[in-house]
Image (cartoon, rainbow, N blue to C red):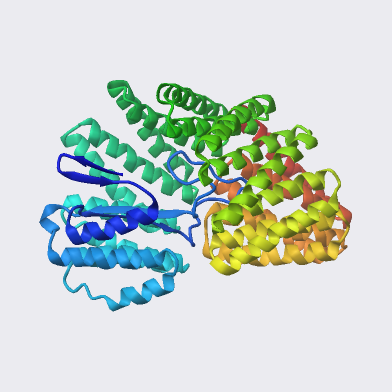
Length: 575
Protein backbone atom coordinates (compact mmCIF):
# COMPACT_ATOMS: atom_id res chain seq x y z
CA UNK A 1 0.00 0.00 0.00
CA UNK A 2 1.37 3.42 -0.94
CA UNK A 3 -0.24 6.58 0.36
CA UNK A 4 0.79 10.11 -0.61
CA UNK A 5 0.67 12.68 2.19
CA UNK A 6 1.95 16.23 1.70
CA UNK A 7 4.78 15.18 -0.56
CA UNK A 8 5.91 12.16 1.51
CA UNK A 9 5.61 8.49 0.67
CA UNK A 10 4.56 5.97 3.32
CA UNK A 11 4.98 2.33 2.39
CA UNK A 12 3.59 -0.56 4.42
CA UNK A 13 3.51 -4.23 3.65
CA UNK A 14 5.24 -7.59 4.18
CA UNK A 15 8.74 -7.51 5.65
CA UNK A 16 10.47 -8.62 2.45
CA UNK A 17 8.73 -5.85 0.49
CA UNK A 18 9.74 -3.26 3.06
CA UNK A 19 13.34 -4.43 3.01
CA UNK A 20 13.46 -3.86 -0.75
CA UNK A 21 11.67 -0.54 -0.34
CA UNK A 22 14.32 0.66 2.09
CA UNK A 23 17.06 -0.12 -0.41
CA UNK A 24 15.28 1.74 -3.20
CA UNK A 25 14.55 4.67 -0.91
CA UNK A 26 18.24 5.08 -0.16
CA UNK A 27 19.04 5.18 -3.87
CA UNK A 28 16.29 7.61 -4.83
CA UNK A 29 16.29 9.73 -1.63
CA UNK A 30 12.49 9.49 -1.59
CA UNK A 31 12.70 8.30 2.01
CA UNK A 32 15.78 9.24 3.99
CA UNK A 33 15.50 6.69 6.75
CA UNK A 34 16.45 3.12 7.45
CA UNK A 35 14.33 0.62 9.36
CA UNK A 36 15.04 -3.09 9.79
CA UNK A 37 14.60 -5.73 12.47
CA UNK A 38 17.36 -8.08 13.50
CA UNK A 39 16.47 -11.25 15.44
CA UNK A 40 18.64 -11.66 18.52
CA UNK A 41 20.43 -14.96 18.97
CA UNK A 42 22.16 -13.76 22.12
CA UNK A 43 19.61 -11.83 24.12
CA UNK A 44 19.41 -12.69 27.77
CA UNK A 45 17.52 -9.86 29.41
CA UNK A 46 14.47 -11.91 30.32
CA UNK A 47 14.17 -14.81 32.70
CA UNK A 48 13.07 -18.31 31.69
CA UNK A 49 10.00 -18.92 33.80
CA UNK A 50 8.45 -21.81 31.85
CA UNK A 51 5.78 -19.40 30.58
CA UNK A 52 6.19 -17.35 27.39
CA UNK A 53 6.62 -13.76 28.37
CA UNK A 54 3.97 -11.15 27.72
CA UNK A 55 4.82 -7.53 27.14
CA UNK A 56 2.48 -4.78 25.92
CA UNK A 57 5.27 -2.90 24.12
CA UNK A 58 7.49 -5.66 22.83
CA UNK A 59 7.59 -9.22 21.59
CA UNK A 60 5.48 -12.22 22.51
CA UNK A 61 5.64 -15.91 21.66
CA UNK A 62 5.57 -16.46 17.93
CA UNK A 63 8.15 -13.93 16.84
CA UNK A 64 11.73 -14.58 15.77
CA UNK A 65 13.22 -14.13 19.21
CA UNK A 66 14.24 -11.00 21.01
CA UNK A 67 14.71 -8.21 18.53
CA UNK A 68 17.05 -5.34 17.96
CA UNK A 69 14.97 -2.89 15.93
CA UNK A 70 16.17 0.64 15.32
CA UNK A 71 15.42 3.49 12.97
CA UNK A 72 17.73 6.30 11.90
CA UNK A 73 16.50 9.33 9.94
CA UNK A 74 19.30 11.59 8.74
CA UNK A 75 18.75 15.30 9.46
CA UNK A 76 19.22 17.61 6.45
CA UNK A 77 22.67 18.83 7.50
CA UNK A 78 24.06 15.29 7.41
CA UNK A 79 22.65 14.23 4.04
CA UNK A 80 25.17 13.74 1.25
CA UNK A 81 26.19 11.29 -1.46
CA UNK A 82 28.64 9.75 1.00
CA UNK A 83 25.86 9.32 3.59
CA UNK A 84 23.71 7.66 0.93
CA UNK A 85 26.53 5.19 0.24
CA UNK A 86 26.87 4.46 3.95
CA UNK A 87 23.16 3.74 4.28
CA UNK A 88 23.27 1.37 1.33
CA UNK A 89 26.20 -0.50 2.83
CA UNK A 90 24.64 -0.65 6.28
CA UNK A 91 21.44 -1.98 4.78
CA UNK A 92 23.33 -4.70 2.89
CA UNK A 93 25.11 -5.87 6.01
CA UNK A 94 21.96 -5.90 8.13
CA UNK A 95 20.04 -7.89 5.55
CA UNK A 96 22.79 -10.50 5.60
CA UNK A 97 22.93 -10.40 9.39
CA UNK A 98 19.40 -11.76 9.58
CA UNK A 99 20.61 -15.21 8.54
CA UNK A 100 24.41 -15.26 8.60
CA UNK A 101 26.22 -13.04 11.14
CA UNK A 102 29.63 -14.47 10.16
CA UNK A 103 29.15 -13.45 6.53
CA UNK A 104 27.80 -10.08 7.67
CA UNK A 105 30.97 -9.48 9.70
CA UNK A 106 33.16 -10.36 6.73
CA UNK A 107 31.22 -7.99 4.50
CA UNK A 108 31.43 -5.22 7.07
CA UNK A 109 35.22 -5.60 7.28
CA UNK A 110 35.49 -4.82 3.56
CA UNK A 111 33.94 -1.39 3.90
CA UNK A 112 35.91 1.77 4.57
CA UNK A 113 33.83 4.68 5.78
CA UNK A 114 36.86 6.94 6.08
CA UNK A 115 36.12 10.21 7.87
CA UNK A 116 32.35 9.82 7.62
CA UNK A 117 30.85 10.55 11.04
CA UNK A 118 27.62 8.92 9.92
CA UNK A 119 29.45 5.80 8.78
CA UNK A 120 31.50 5.54 11.94
CA UNK A 121 28.43 5.55 14.16
CA UNK A 122 26.06 3.47 12.05
CA UNK A 123 28.63 0.79 11.31
CA UNK A 124 29.41 0.79 15.02
CA UNK A 125 25.80 -0.07 15.79
CA UNK A 126 25.89 -2.87 13.23
CA UNK A 127 29.20 -4.17 14.63
CA UNK A 128 27.56 -4.32 18.05
CA UNK A 129 24.65 -6.33 16.63
CA UNK A 130 27.02 -8.74 14.93
CA UNK A 131 28.95 -9.21 18.18
CA UNK A 132 25.68 -9.83 19.97
CA UNK A 133 24.54 -12.38 17.43
CA UNK A 134 27.85 -14.18 17.90
CA UNK A 135 27.55 -14.15 21.68
CA UNK A 136 30.39 -11.69 22.40
CA UNK A 137 28.76 -9.63 25.17
CA UNK A 138 32.00 -7.85 26.08
CA UNK A 139 32.44 -6.58 22.53
CA UNK A 140 28.83 -5.35 22.47
CA UNK A 141 29.48 -3.31 25.63
CA UNK A 142 32.68 -1.75 24.30
CA UNK A 143 31.33 -0.92 20.86
CA UNK A 144 28.05 0.56 22.11
CA UNK A 145 29.78 2.67 24.78
CA UNK A 146 31.99 4.14 22.04
CA UNK A 147 28.93 4.81 19.84
CA UNK A 148 27.17 6.63 22.68
CA UNK A 149 30.18 8.82 23.44
CA UNK A 150 30.72 9.61 19.77
CA UNK A 151 27.05 10.40 19.21
CA UNK A 152 27.03 12.93 22.07
CA UNK A 153 29.29 15.17 19.96
CA UNK A 154 26.96 15.09 16.95
CA UNK A 155 23.85 17.15 16.09
CA UNK A 156 21.07 16.46 18.58
CA UNK A 157 18.54 15.30 15.99
CA UNK A 158 20.96 12.53 14.95
CA UNK A 159 22.53 11.86 18.35
CA UNK A 160 19.26 11.06 20.11
CA UNK A 161 18.37 8.46 17.47
CA UNK A 162 21.77 6.79 17.66
CA UNK A 163 21.73 6.66 21.46
CA UNK A 164 18.17 5.29 21.49
CA UNK A 165 19.31 2.62 19.02
CA UNK A 166 22.29 1.83 21.26
CA UNK A 167 19.89 1.36 24.18
CA UNK A 168 17.73 -1.04 22.17
CA UNK A 169 20.74 -3.09 21.06
CA UNK A 170 22.18 -3.10 24.57
CA UNK A 171 18.96 -4.37 26.13
CA UNK A 172 18.41 -6.94 23.38
CA UNK A 173 21.88 -8.44 23.83
CA UNK A 174 22.27 -8.01 27.58
CA UNK A 175 24.87 -5.20 27.35
CA UNK A 176 23.39 -3.42 30.35
CA UNK A 177 26.26 -1.04 31.14
CA UNK A 178 26.08 0.63 27.74
CA UNK A 179 22.28 0.45 27.77
CA UNK A 180 22.38 2.24 31.12
CA UNK A 181 24.65 4.97 29.72
CA UNK A 182 22.23 5.47 26.84
CA UNK A 183 19.20 5.54 29.12
CA UNK A 184 20.79 8.10 31.46
CA UNK A 185 21.59 10.37 28.51
CA UNK A 186 18.03 10.14 27.19
CA UNK A 187 16.59 11.03 30.61
CA UNK A 188 18.94 14.00 31.08
CA UNK A 189 18.05 15.26 27.62
CA UNK A 190 14.35 14.73 28.28
CA UNK A 191 14.47 16.71 31.54
CA UNK A 192 16.21 19.63 29.84
CA UNK A 193 13.64 19.74 27.04
CA UNK A 194 10.73 19.55 29.46
CA UNK A 195 12.27 22.36 31.49
CA UNK A 196 12.73 24.50 28.39
CA UNK A 197 9.49 23.70 26.54
CA UNK A 198 7.11 21.73 28.76
CA UNK A 199 5.13 20.61 25.72
CA UNK A 200 3.17 17.32 25.85
CA UNK A 201 5.45 15.82 23.22
CA UNK A 202 8.61 16.48 25.24
CA UNK A 203 6.96 15.17 28.40
CA UNK A 204 5.98 12.03 26.51
CA UNK A 205 9.60 11.62 25.38
CA UNK A 206 10.68 11.89 29.02
CA UNK A 207 8.24 9.11 29.93
CA UNK A 208 9.82 6.89 27.28
CA UNK A 209 13.31 7.72 28.55
CA UNK A 210 12.35 6.97 32.15
CA UNK A 211 10.98 3.60 31.06
CA UNK A 212 14.31 2.86 29.41
CA UNK A 213 16.04 3.48 32.76
CA UNK A 214 13.50 1.22 34.46
CA UNK A 215 14.00 -1.53 31.91
CA UNK A 216 17.76 -1.60 32.49
CA UNK A 217 17.30 -1.54 36.26
CA UNK A 218 14.85 -4.45 36.04
CA UNK A 219 17.34 -6.48 34.06
CA UNK A 220 19.95 -5.79 36.72
CA UNK A 221 17.61 -6.70 39.55
CA UNK A 222 17.76 -3.11 40.90
CA UNK A 223 14.11 -2.91 41.89
CA UNK A 224 14.39 0.34 43.88
CA UNK A 225 15.82 2.14 40.85
CA UNK A 226 13.25 0.58 38.53
CA UNK A 227 10.43 1.53 40.89
CA UNK A 228 11.50 5.19 41.04
CA UNK A 229 11.88 5.46 37.26
CA UNK A 230 8.55 3.79 36.50
CA UNK A 231 6.85 5.77 39.27
CA UNK A 232 7.94 9.08 37.79
CA UNK A 233 6.92 7.90 34.32
CA UNK A 234 3.49 6.97 35.70
CA UNK A 235 3.03 10.39 37.29
CA UNK A 236 3.75 12.15 33.99
CA UNK A 237 1.62 9.68 32.01
CA UNK A 238 -1.31 10.31 34.34
CA UNK A 239 -0.99 14.07 33.83
CA UNK A 240 -0.85 13.70 30.04
CA UNK A 241 -3.86 11.36 29.95
CA UNK A 242 -5.83 13.89 32.00
CA UNK A 243 -4.79 16.85 29.85
CA UNK A 244 -5.03 15.26 26.40
CA UNK A 245 -7.54 12.46 26.84
CA UNK A 246 -6.41 10.87 23.58
CA UNK A 247 -6.38 7.13 23.02
CA UNK A 248 -2.60 7.23 22.73
CA UNK A 249 -2.18 9.06 26.04
CA UNK A 250 -4.58 6.69 27.80
CA UNK A 251 -2.74 3.68 26.36
CA UNK A 252 0.57 5.08 27.59
CA UNK A 253 -0.97 5.43 31.05
CA UNK A 254 -2.11 1.81 30.96
CA UNK A 255 1.39 0.65 30.00
CA UNK A 256 3.00 2.78 32.73
CA UNK A 257 0.66 1.23 35.28
CA UNK A 258 1.70 -2.23 34.15
CA UNK A 259 5.36 -1.32 34.59
CA UNK A 260 4.77 -0.12 38.14
CA UNK A 261 2.80 -3.28 38.84
CA UNK A 262 5.62 -5.48 37.55
CA UNK A 263 8.07 -3.97 40.03
CA UNK A 264 5.59 -4.07 42.91
CA UNK A 265 4.89 -7.75 42.28
CA UNK A 266 8.59 -8.59 42.05
CA UNK A 267 9.16 -6.85 45.38
CA UNK A 268 6.31 -8.79 46.99
CA UNK A 269 3.99 -5.76 47.24
CA UNK A 270 1.08 -7.83 46.01
CA UNK A 271 -1.79 -5.53 47.00
CA UNK A 272 -0.14 -2.58 45.25
CA UNK A 273 0.50 -4.72 42.16
CA UNK A 274 -3.13 -5.85 42.09
CA UNK A 275 -4.41 -2.27 42.33
CA UNK A 276 -2.33 -0.84 39.49
CA UNK A 277 -2.89 -3.85 37.24
CA UNK A 278 -6.65 -3.54 37.72
CA UNK A 279 -6.52 0.19 36.90
CA UNK A 280 -4.52 -0.61 33.77
CA UNK A 281 -7.05 -3.28 32.76
CA UNK A 282 -9.92 -0.84 33.24
CA UNK A 283 -8.30 1.66 30.86
CA UNK A 284 -7.45 -1.09 28.38
CA UNK A 285 -11.05 -2.33 28.48
CA UNK A 286 -12.36 1.16 27.71
CA UNK A 287 -9.96 1.51 24.79
CA UNK A 288 -10.88 -1.92 23.44
CA UNK A 289 -14.56 -0.96 23.55
CA UNK A 290 -13.95 2.49 22.01
CA UNK A 291 -11.55 1.41 19.27
CA UNK A 292 -12.15 -2.29 18.72
CA UNK A 293 -8.81 -2.65 16.96
CA UNK A 294 -6.68 -5.81 17.26
CA UNK A 295 -4.00 -3.76 19.07
CA UNK A 296 -6.48 -2.43 21.62
CA UNK A 297 -7.97 -5.88 22.18
CA UNK A 298 -4.50 -7.38 22.65
CA UNK A 299 -3.61 -4.62 25.12
CA UNK A 300 -6.65 -5.70 27.12
CA UNK A 301 -5.50 -9.30 26.92
CA UNK A 302 -2.07 -8.31 28.30
CA UNK A 303 -3.55 -6.25 31.14
CA UNK A 304 -5.94 -9.03 32.11
CA UNK A 305 -3.07 -11.48 32.11
CA UNK A 306 -1.24 -9.23 34.59
CA UNK A 307 -4.31 -9.12 36.83
CA UNK A 308 -4.40 -12.90 36.71
CA UNK A 309 -0.71 -13.12 37.60
CA UNK A 310 -1.26 -10.87 40.62
CA UNK A 311 -4.25 -12.92 41.77
CA UNK A 312 -2.21 -16.09 41.31
CA UNK A 313 0.62 -14.64 43.43
CA UNK A 314 -1.91 -14.05 46.22
CA UNK A 315 -3.32 -17.58 45.80
CA UNK A 316 -6.69 -16.14 44.76
CA UNK A 317 -7.26 -18.95 42.31
CA UNK A 318 -10.89 -18.14 41.54
CA UNK A 319 -10.11 -14.61 40.36
CA UNK A 320 -7.04 -15.81 38.48
CA UNK A 321 -9.08 -18.43 36.64
CA UNK A 322 -11.80 -15.90 35.77
CA UNK A 323 -9.43 -13.34 34.21
CA UNK A 324 -7.35 -15.99 32.44
CA UNK A 325 -10.52 -17.39 30.88
CA UNK A 326 -11.55 -13.92 29.70
CA UNK A 327 -8.11 -13.19 28.25
CA UNK A 328 -8.03 -16.62 26.58
CA UNK A 329 -11.39 -15.86 24.98
CA UNK A 330 -9.98 -12.61 23.56
CA UNK A 331 -6.95 -14.53 22.31
CA UNK A 332 -9.27 -17.05 20.58
CA UNK A 333 -11.12 -14.22 18.85
CA UNK A 334 -7.86 -12.63 17.70
CA UNK A 335 -6.63 -15.99 16.47
CA UNK A 336 -9.82 -16.47 14.46
CA UNK A 337 -9.73 -12.90 13.11
CA UNK A 338 -6.02 -12.66 12.35
CA UNK A 339 -4.58 -16.15 12.39
CA UNK A 340 -1.10 -14.71 12.91
CA UNK A 341 1.69 -16.53 14.75
CA UNK A 342 1.55 -13.82 17.42
CA UNK A 343 -2.16 -14.32 18.04
CA UNK A 344 -1.80 -18.09 18.15
CA UNK A 345 1.22 -17.81 20.42
CA UNK A 346 -0.73 -15.55 22.77
CA UNK A 347 -3.48 -18.13 22.94
CA UNK A 348 -1.00 -20.91 23.71
CA UNK A 349 0.56 -18.89 26.52
CA UNK A 350 -2.79 -17.99 28.06
CA UNK A 351 -3.90 -21.61 27.94
CA UNK A 352 -0.75 -22.47 29.88
CA UNK A 353 -1.67 -19.87 32.49
CA UNK A 354 -5.15 -21.35 32.80
CA UNK A 355 -3.63 -24.80 33.09
CA UNK A 356 -1.31 -23.64 35.83
CA UNK A 357 -4.24 -22.34 37.89
CA UNK A 358 -6.13 -25.61 37.40
CA UNK A 359 -3.01 -27.51 38.43
CA UNK A 360 -2.61 -25.36 41.56
CA UNK A 361 -6.25 -26.04 42.48
CA UNK A 362 -5.71 -29.76 42.08
CA UNK A 363 -7.87 -30.08 38.96
CA UNK A 364 -5.34 -32.10 37.00
CA UNK A 365 -7.87 -33.25 34.39
CA UNK A 366 -8.62 -29.67 33.31
CA UNK A 367 -4.94 -28.77 33.47
CA UNK A 368 -4.09 -31.71 31.24
CA UNK A 369 -6.71 -30.71 28.67
CA UNK A 370 -5.64 -27.07 28.35
CA UNK A 371 -1.96 -27.97 28.31
CA UNK A 372 -2.65 -30.42 25.50
CA UNK A 373 -4.40 -27.69 23.48
CA UNK A 374 -1.50 -25.32 24.10
CA UNK A 375 0.96 -28.03 23.07
CA UNK A 376 -0.86 -28.59 19.78
CA UNK A 377 -0.61 -24.88 18.94
CA UNK A 378 3.08 -24.77 19.90
CA UNK A 379 3.82 -27.79 17.72
CA UNK A 380 2.15 -26.09 14.76
CA UNK A 381 4.12 -22.89 15.30
CA UNK A 382 7.41 -24.72 15.68
CA UNK A 383 6.72 -26.69 12.50
CA UNK A 384 5.59 -23.68 10.47
CA UNK A 385 8.16 -21.15 11.65
CA UNK A 386 11.09 -23.23 12.77
CA UNK A 387 12.48 -20.23 14.65
CA UNK A 388 14.40 -20.57 17.91
CA UNK A 389 11.58 -18.74 19.70
CA UNK A 390 8.89 -21.07 18.37
CA UNK A 391 10.94 -24.14 19.21
CA UNK A 392 11.60 -22.77 22.69
CA UNK A 393 7.86 -22.27 23.13
CA UNK A 394 7.34 -25.91 22.22
CA UNK A 395 9.89 -27.03 24.83
CA UNK A 396 8.13 -24.97 27.51
CA UNK A 397 4.75 -26.46 26.57
CA UNK A 398 6.19 -29.98 26.75
CA UNK A 399 7.48 -29.27 30.25
CA UNK A 400 3.96 -28.24 31.31
CA UNK A 401 2.50 -31.47 29.96
CA UNK A 402 5.22 -33.38 31.77
CA UNK A 403 4.47 -31.57 35.04
CA UNK A 404 0.85 -32.72 35.06
CA UNK A 405 1.76 -36.24 34.06
CA UNK A 406 4.26 -36.44 36.90
CA UNK A 407 1.73 -35.12 39.42
CA UNK A 408 -0.69 -37.80 38.27
CA UNK A 409 1.96 -40.46 38.79
CA UNK A 410 2.26 -41.10 35.05
CA UNK A 411 6.03 -41.15 35.14
CA UNK A 412 6.54 -42.72 31.72
CA UNK A 413 4.45 -40.03 30.02
CA UNK A 414 6.24 -37.35 32.02
CA UNK A 415 9.62 -38.74 31.03
CA UNK A 416 8.65 -38.74 27.35
CA UNK A 417 7.50 -35.10 27.44
CA UNK A 418 10.52 -33.96 29.42
CA UNK A 419 12.83 -35.93 27.15
CA UNK A 420 11.46 -34.28 24.01
CA UNK A 421 11.78 -30.88 25.64
CA UNK A 422 15.38 -31.65 26.62
CA UNK A 423 16.23 -32.67 23.05
CA UNK A 424 14.94 -29.33 21.75
CA UNK A 425 16.85 -27.40 24.40
CA UNK A 426 20.07 -29.27 23.59
CA UNK A 427 19.66 -28.34 19.92
CA UNK A 428 19.04 -24.68 20.73
CA UNK A 429 21.96 -24.52 23.17
CA UNK A 430 24.23 -26.05 20.54
CA UNK A 431 23.00 -23.79 17.72
CA UNK A 432 22.84 -20.53 19.65
CA UNK A 433 25.21 -20.96 22.55
CA UNK A 434 23.56 -18.03 24.32
CA UNK A 435 23.19 -17.74 28.09
CA UNK A 436 19.41 -17.91 27.66
CA UNK A 437 19.56 -21.11 25.60
CA UNK A 438 21.96 -22.71 28.05
CA UNK A 439 19.78 -21.73 31.00
CA UNK A 440 16.78 -23.23 29.27
CA UNK A 441 18.80 -26.43 28.93
CA UNK A 442 19.38 -26.52 32.69
CA UNK A 443 15.64 -26.13 33.31
CA UNK A 444 14.90 -29.14 31.10
CA UNK A 445 17.68 -31.13 32.74
CA UNK A 446 16.12 -30.40 36.14
CA UNK A 447 12.76 -31.69 34.91
CA UNK A 448 14.35 -34.90 33.66
CA UNK A 449 16.20 -35.26 36.94
CA UNK A 450 13.02 -34.69 38.91
CA UNK A 451 11.07 -37.47 37.20
CA UNK A 452 14.07 -39.82 37.46
CA UNK A 453 14.23 -39.06 41.17
CA UNK A 454 10.48 -39.71 41.52
CA UNK A 455 10.95 -43.10 39.83
CA UNK A 456 13.80 -43.97 42.21
CA UNK A 457 16.45 -43.82 39.50
CA UNK A 458 18.92 -41.84 41.60
CA UNK A 459 21.88 -42.53 39.31
CA UNK A 460 20.21 -40.84 36.32
CA UNK A 461 18.94 -38.03 38.54
CA UNK A 462 22.42 -37.45 39.90
CA UNK A 463 23.94 -37.33 36.41
CA UNK A 464 21.51 -34.79 34.95
CA UNK A 465 21.55 -32.64 38.10
CA UNK A 466 25.36 -32.61 37.93
CA UNK A 467 25.22 -31.52 34.28
CA UNK A 468 22.76 -28.76 35.17
CA UNK A 469 24.99 -27.60 38.03
CA UNK A 470 28.06 -27.41 35.79
CA UNK A 471 26.24 -25.20 33.28
CA UNK A 472 24.81 -22.97 35.99
CA UNK A 473 28.25 -22.50 37.53
CA UNK A 474 29.55 -21.31 34.18
CA UNK A 475 26.61 -18.93 33.76
CA UNK A 476 26.99 -17.53 37.28
CA UNK A 477 30.70 -16.92 36.65
CA UNK A 478 29.91 -14.55 33.79
CA UNK A 479 26.63 -13.12 35.07
CA UNK A 480 26.39 -11.44 38.46
CA UNK A 481 22.63 -10.85 38.29
CA UNK A 482 20.50 -12.31 41.13
CA UNK A 483 18.72 -14.76 38.84
CA UNK A 484 21.96 -16.50 37.90
CA UNK A 485 22.90 -16.80 41.58
CA UNK A 486 19.45 -18.15 42.45
CA UNK A 487 19.73 -20.71 39.65
CA UNK A 488 23.07 -21.88 41.02
CA UNK A 489 21.63 -22.28 44.52
CA UNK A 490 18.71 -24.33 43.14
CA UNK A 491 21.11 -26.61 41.23
CA UNK A 492 23.21 -27.12 44.36
CA UNK A 493 20.09 -27.97 46.34
CA UNK A 494 19.10 -30.60 43.76
CA UNK A 495 22.55 -32.17 43.84
CA UNK A 496 22.53 -32.17 47.64
CA UNK A 497 19.10 -33.77 47.84
CA UNK A 498 20.03 -36.68 45.55
CA UNK A 499 23.40 -37.13 47.26
CA UNK A 500 21.58 -37.34 50.59
CA UNK A 501 19.22 -39.99 49.21
CA UNK A 502 22.27 -41.99 48.11
CA UNK A 503 23.87 -41.61 51.57
CA UNK A 504 26.68 -39.53 50.10
CA UNK A 505 26.78 -37.15 53.05
CA UNK A 506 30.01 -35.40 52.12
CA UNK A 507 28.65 -34.27 48.75
CA UNK A 508 25.27 -33.41 50.26
CA UNK A 509 26.83 -31.32 53.03
CA UNK A 510 29.07 -29.36 50.67
CA UNK A 511 26.18 -28.68 48.27
CA UNK A 512 23.77 -27.52 50.99
CA UNK A 513 26.40 -25.28 52.61
CA UNK A 514 27.19 -23.53 49.32
CA UNK A 515 23.49 -23.18 48.50
CA UNK A 516 22.86 -21.67 51.95
CA UNK A 517 25.64 -19.13 51.46
CA UNK A 518 24.13 -17.98 48.17
CA UNK A 519 20.57 -17.85 49.49
CA UNK A 520 21.62 -15.82 52.55
CA UNK A 521 23.43 -13.37 50.27
CA UNK A 522 20.31 -13.00 48.10
CA UNK A 523 18.14 -12.30 51.15
CA UNK A 524 20.58 -9.57 52.18
CA UNK A 525 21.01 -8.03 48.73
CA UNK A 526 17.64 -8.60 47.04
CA UNK A 527 15.27 -9.22 49.93
CA UNK A 528 12.30 -10.33 47.81
CA UNK A 529 9.73 -12.82 49.15
CA UNK A 530 11.11 -15.36 46.68
CA UNK A 531 14.59 -14.98 48.20
CA UNK A 532 13.16 -15.67 51.68
CA UNK A 533 11.24 -18.71 50.42
CA UNK A 534 14.34 -20.11 48.72
CA UNK A 535 16.39 -19.74 51.91
CA UNK A 536 13.68 -21.39 54.01
CA UNK A 537 13.56 -24.38 51.66
CA UNK A 538 17.34 -24.91 51.59
CA UNK A 539 17.48 -24.53 55.40
CA UNK A 540 14.91 -27.32 55.71
CA UNK A 541 16.93 -29.60 53.46
CA UNK A 542 20.20 -28.84 55.24
CA UNK A 543 18.59 -29.39 58.65
CA UNK A 544 17.22 -32.75 57.50
CA UNK A 545 20.68 -33.82 56.32
CA UNK A 546 22.29 -32.71 59.59
CA UNK A 547 19.67 -34.57 61.64
CA UNK A 548 20.15 -37.75 59.60
CA UNK A 549 23.88 -37.64 60.35
CA UNK A 550 23.27 -37.18 64.06
CA UNK A 551 24.37 -33.52 64.13
CA UNK A 552 21.46 -32.47 66.31
CA UNK A 553 22.90 -29.13 67.37
CA UNK A 554 23.46 -28.05 63.78
CA UNK A 555 19.99 -29.26 62.80
CA UNK A 556 18.39 -27.28 65.64
CA UNK A 557 20.26 -24.11 64.67
CA UNK A 558 19.21 -24.47 61.04
CA UNK A 559 15.57 -25.10 62.01
CA UNK A 560 15.56 -22.05 64.28
CA UNK A 561 16.96 -19.92 61.47
CA UNK A 562 14.27 -21.28 59.16
CA UNK A 563 11.56 -20.35 61.67
CA UNK A 564 12.91 -16.79 61.82
CA UNK A 565 12.94 -16.56 58.02
CA UNK A 566 9.36 -17.84 57.78
CA UNK A 567 8.28 -15.30 60.41
CA UNK A 568 9.94 -12.48 58.46
CA UNK A 569 8.31 -13.70 55.26
CA UNK A 570 4.88 -13.73 56.91
CA UNK A 571 5.41 -10.18 58.19
CA UNK A 572 6.50 -9.05 54.74
CA UNK A 573 3.45 -10.66 53.14
CA UNK A 574 1.09 -9.01 55.64
CA UNK A 575 2.62 -5.60 54.91
